[in-house]
Image (cartoon, rainbow, N blue to C red; front, side, top):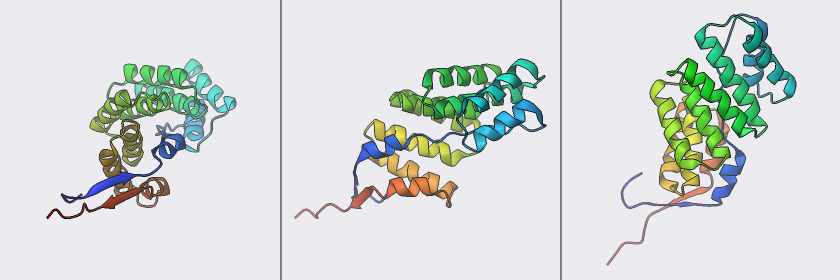
Length: 189
C-alpha cells in the first residue's frame, strides 16, 4: 500500500465469524485413509467420516506421511464441528510424526483462531508457510483472520490480497476485502 494511505476495516467480527479455512492432506492408495482424505477435502464433518480416519489409523499400515496426513484430515473434520481441542490434539500428533508437514501447523493455527488465540495462531501459520503447504492461499486467509483478531487491519488486508493473488478464483478472500476501505488522508497545510 502506498505511503500516506489509511486503511479502515468495517465489521471486523464478521470475518472471524466466517471461520478459518482448512487445508486437508491428500492421501492416495485406497482404503480408509484415502476415504478419510476425500472426506476432509470435500468438506465433510460427520462422525462417519471421522470414523474412516479412526479406522485408517487403527488398522492400516501407513507410511509416516500418510499417517501424519490422516491425523491432519481427522483434525480438519473435527475442527469443522468446532471440536478445537480434539482437532489440536490431532494436529499435534501429525507434527510429532512428521515435523515438516506444513498443514499440521496451518490447521493448528486455524483451530487457535476458533479458540480466539490469535497470536499463537499467527506463529503456527507462519511456521506452516515456512515448511510449505499444498494450499498457501488458505494459510494467508487464516493469517488474515488472526491479524483481524489482533486488530491489525493493515496486515489482514495484505494477507487477504496475497490469498487472492495465490487463488484468484477463490471468492472468500475477496468477500472479506470488500469490508475494507482505503483512503488518503487530507493534505496538511
